[in-house]
Picture 1 (tube, rainbow, N blue to C red):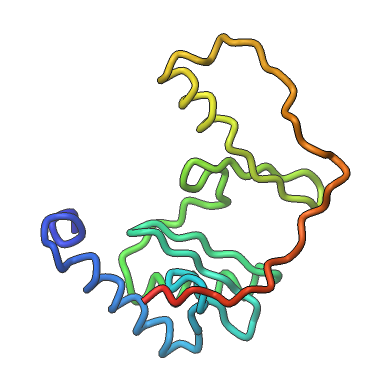
Picture 2: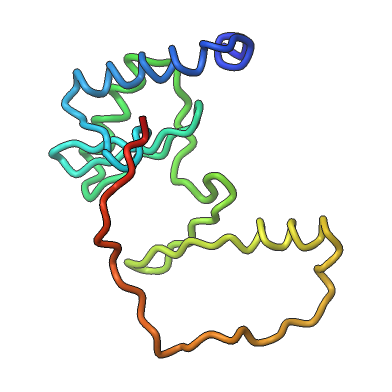
Length: 141
């Protein structure tokens, strides 16, 4: 598996093509904004990053059904609820989910010798509100 994923130049594309084909045949569609994000009509979303994936949805039974399908097609290990993915910590508090990059930032600051410096306030207008981007998506292909 390691050689097939990392040893050959065409291996990542072949892996993605196989994964993509399996999900499309099962009724998923990929996001136009990112070809590695899949969704289906049951509101289950799969995010793929090389050989790691995050599967989530609004109904645990639907998520478990998708995991069973994926296990039947691929050699997978279910690591349970995600606590960290791609350096982002996932914190659950009641019905809320918080995403934190604190560990990444601290590691970055330590690496470049800025960890022990004193913080300063950022000149940012706290009354300003972000607006949804109404521009066109960029084609990922």
